[in-house]
Image (tube, rainbow, N blue to C red):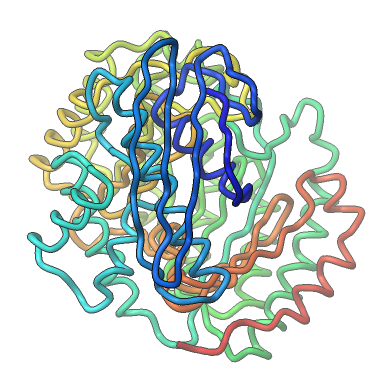
Length: 483
């Protein structure tokens, strides 16, 4: 649909996000002309107390109209924008709903953090009845997704309440992989082309780690959690991993939780696992994405399901690790039964965490082009039911643009095994410092209501070239006043 806005042009992005969620297979733009898929016209009116959005959606001879009013929370630019955005998006949702066969599971929710509005509406806790009412009335979310949101919001609130006032989280990125998986949109370079950059990248990263330690010390901040991700961190040799983790121990505050992604079984060896165990790494990932060999081949994952099991068993032998395993629903070549069979195989292995993603055709992935894909919510409901019956509970939740079925990604954990970094980062509960190429530092305050970002260069070569400048910025980093 073509988006036409009368005044308030800053709402273009918000309305585009809503249309992408509701009509993912169509093209949406901004302009006065009537598009191939129709037009959505939004008029926003403001008075001293509220914003009211009036939306008309037109397709052929069919016209659907809706309006929605939101009271202002205050007169600051951020508060005014928040109220205006909610009015416009809700009115747009209600108008476009007339073109849909049924309401989508997430209703009018287009944000990536469904639990955040619930937490912010009830900062001191909520009953199930209060939460269901807010999520239904404000967003028209289906009961099953409301339940997920409530469970994850409670986990986030428990994590937030347990954070010390001067604690943050830290991420270290290793943007290299043996090869590019077709669904991957992360900044990562295949070692066949970028292998010679790994050692100079590591040198630059060690400098930034040292500088970040200085910045944390000056702000008197400790670390609740530290996460080393990628890419594939275990693309590093055992000696390189040892240098990296030794530098982490020497330069940074000791984190309460230390995670290293070991997601590609074709990069995991006994000596690397021994290094991780020796440095006190408590959490790792062994990520299959699927347990169907033909699906792995189509996803450009150069390993088999049997190799995943071997890698998992080796990890159990080599250290006392809490293990996470990821699956992706909607991968090319997979079937509903194949996906559920993968879920059952992971449950049988009994990792501490299982994370269920839905395929998202993001700009940075080889699978960018093509239809978003139909993924029934009932399939995920069945997977979630099997996980909960096996003793897992949902603890963090997020959504993505262009995600199959307009659904969600959910992390499940056995009791006592939630990943605190995942919660802190996704819910923006505390400052999250990001080191390495593509890192985005988030200086979060006030429970995520205030977030400012500092970005590192996106690609390894640029990061290496600007290593000194990046290190200086981390050394002078000033974190928000403790809560």
